[in-house]
Image 1: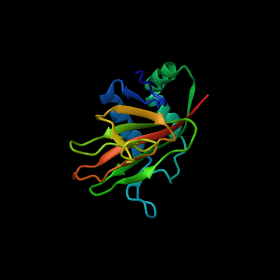
Image 2: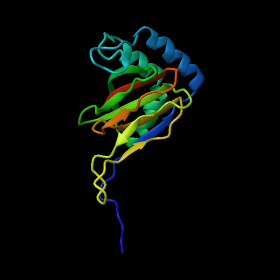
Image 3: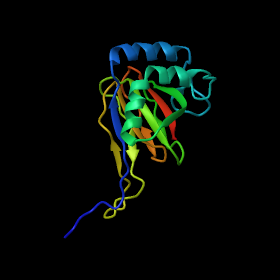
Image 4: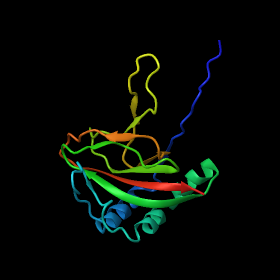
Length: 174
């Protein structure tokens, strides 16, 4: 009997190099682009705010890591949007994706002990049970996760009193 995988969805994990310095730089950078709640959102973000200059400043800080990814996939990448999301106690992010073409990244800027991580939803149900399968990738603060933009994902409610903050961005493949 031969067992093969019919489909394969790649994902990448990249440690932020020189994390203590980059963490300080990113916290300082994102203070200029403050998070707030918008409408019915269940989290704080700056995605609906003016973020002029943020893509360039962000790519200057994480250029090494983005270059590592570009070399791995053997394609040039262009960051087209970047924003932050801050979760306070009880806040969460419902299932969503970032489009159909390209990649999306998440960097865990502040991840308190016990905080939930992003859960990725398999695009098809289990063929035996017909249940939705989701996977919370084990990550730590300072780690970057990159997935195709079409992958649905969510963040369960934050139960800790300390805030969780992520930086997310979308990339086109050149």
